Length: 116
Image (cartoon, rainbow, N blue to C red; front, side, top):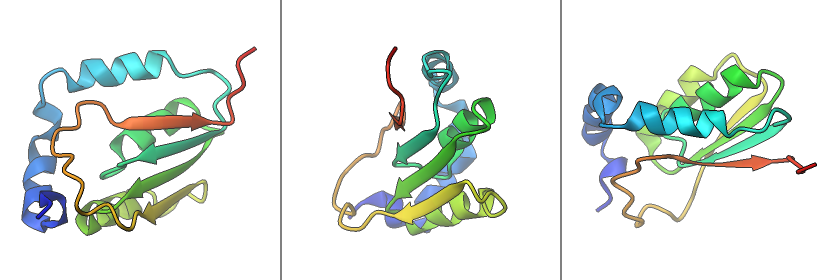
C-alpha cells in the first residue's frame, strides 16, 4: 500500500516537511533557474501545493496545474488555491501503486517556455 493514500501519514509528513534537510536549499536552486517568461506550470506530485505556490508567487502572471493522487494532499492543495482561478488541482488516476516516499525536489515542468 502506498502511504500517501493514508491521511495520518500525510498529516505527519506535513507537520515535519519544513524540517526536511536541504529542502529549502533545493527549492531555492529551482527558483533561481526559473525562466522569467514562465506562463504555465505543471507540478507533478504537487502534494499540498507548496512548490506550485512558490513558483506562482515569483511568476504572478503564470497559470498552474497541480497533479497528485493522494486524496489528503489534493484536499490541502485545493484548499490553498480555492480562490485562485489561475490554478487547477487535478487528481492523477492510476499512480497509487507508485512508491515515491522520498521526494527531495518536486518535479515541476515549465510549459510554454521557449529558449531564446
